[in-house]
Length: 396
Ligand SMILES: Nc1nc2c(ncn2[C@@H]2O[C@H](COP(=O)(O)OP(=O)(O)OP(=O)(O)O)[C@@H](O)[C@H]2O)c(=O)[nH]1
Ligand SMILES: [Mg+2]
Image (cartoon, rainbow, N blue to C red; front, side):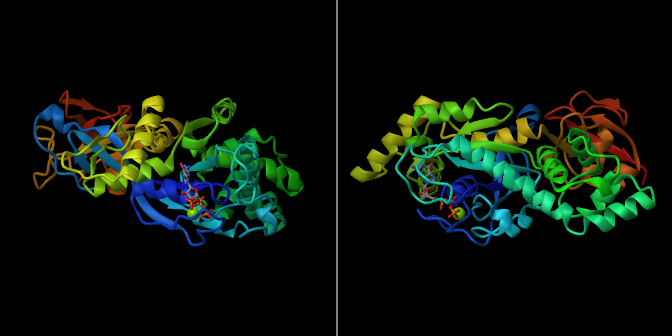
């Protein structure tokens, strides 16, 4: 699972990335600070079933703190995108190829309105952040349609001649872009494409590109720089139809995570508050900065960064967390590790889908599963629930 961070230059993409992952990234108040992508691991929180069985867990691919399982998601921070990047402006849009494997995107918007389209600092409030949403979606549509258009005539002619379903031909053409055939099928339907792909015009493929982005690279908007953003800008972004918008202060979240790492404060990412550790010696500047952060958290419930990551996984992608085990009595793997693995799978997945997620062979040879909580046997079509613990039985 990978989430890509996108947006115009200088809006706080790397700050958000660094706050969410604690991976180092260069941050500066000018455009195009980031050229090469930054990669890191963020986490989403889930109630760990180890609490239900009353034994500490031994997580393999995740951490667990005080009964909260932290399930990893990969995160990628890329260079800034400017209007007409598809025509080569700024750094162009070739670098978006790094986002091929991303299942979802977080669009960082400077909600303070203090950066223009190119990412240059401008008087706060002089730029309308709502305009950034439209331009970025348009650039992403151009990116996808540009890839479709490259050598399309040949592909379309061949598909028509050999009567290959067009979603299949497109899927092949876009191999590696991370789109599934069903997503492509739905995007074609949403775009009212001509049944004859040789008749598709540039405008048609642009419409298709937009719908493919909606289906295959859906997006959450982070209304960033919340700490300095006028309320009307946040409200205007929140009022955008059909989009999930989360106000964030990446700068504050990064400060908190760094202070927690340095042992100055106690802070769990996503929590509504933090406490200064006893014996921490704070400078006047630090106290002032922490007071400002506390004030925003009181007003908004948190800095928003962790919420934004979790809304992307939970609400936008509608993923749930499940735990496969080998032993349904002790909730362990073969070696006796308690609840070693946590997997993210789409809500609505079946026990067999989950088996495939763990291992292709386990999916292919699936016989049945056992719900470790109820000890009930469930079949291949059992719909897996969030927080389920399942033993999968397969032919050897
Ligand atoms: N006030 C405030 N400033 C922020 C916030 N997030 C980032 N910044 C500042 O915005 C500037 C740009 O931050 P970066 O993280 O480098 O932005 P970027 O989008 O990665 O920029 P490029 O890599 O150049 O595209 C820096 O001065 C940050 O300190 C925030 O939440 N609030
Ligand atoms: Mg950057």
